[in-house]
Length: 366
Image 1 (tube, rainbow, N blue to C red):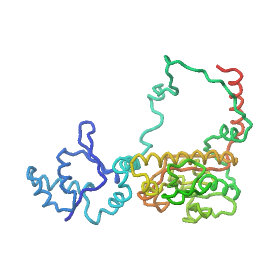
Image 2: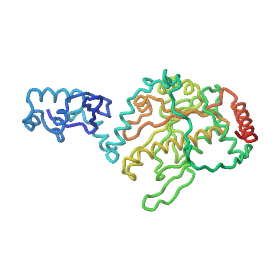
Image 3: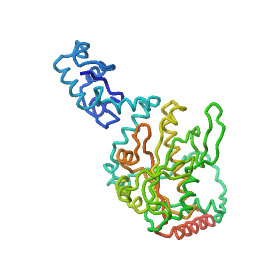
């Protein structure tokens, strides 16, 4: 049987053991360091017998056993088993192994295994919130109070992450505004050698606009509930799954109640080649993640300005979510989840209290 080394492998030492990890599948195994020598014999398609002959310093019987074990764990693949491996090599080639290893190995990590609050944290062993240089010369800046009644300032200071929503349907114009202002084009530019470029209201490295929006609508006037893709150019919602429910959305986000109660949830994905075709260094992976953060902040501020409550999370079941969206997780991969609805509480009360505290600080600076 022909075998070849999987493209997506990393090796490292951990607690004195030699570890081989397939970051696409999440499989990792502690093996003897000699396993790397065996894997090196399978750079191209070859049989186990031919590989063993190329390793005369190793015991043939042990070598054959190691080959079988490496194949069983997916570190060696047969021709019919290499589809995902080949696809990853094709679409992440320019960013591999650095970005691909980080992205795919972290997809399989269950964040619930690392609780946010542990006993040491409760006991006060926490990183300091503020950093300073006590011995440095300093200039005290003047405290210039902003115009707290200006629309943008009210939006900025009024933004809250909401985890409870009223079961009230969004007016269609409000949903339309939210999607257009966050995900739609603000203008088009002549990129010369790079062709026509689209701008959004969020900063985006290289204006590649690799981020796509899949919109789960649960309560909006005139919109049948279900999962849609937002067509940016046409400013339309394309129905993908009319059976997509609140319960399904919440499950995909580790059963967070905010997702189950929101009127609309937006699953943000990244189309890798839109970015990697221009920016070929693996550092561009950071740009893609940062772009998602820019877009998420614009979503939160826009929702606030429209009188809605925003919510955002990175806690989602990657593979299940990508299956639900109909993307393969390699060419297009889930990055962020945003949600909005009519707030269950009265954020204006929190906002006024915050402004009062701010004004007191201005009058009586400590």
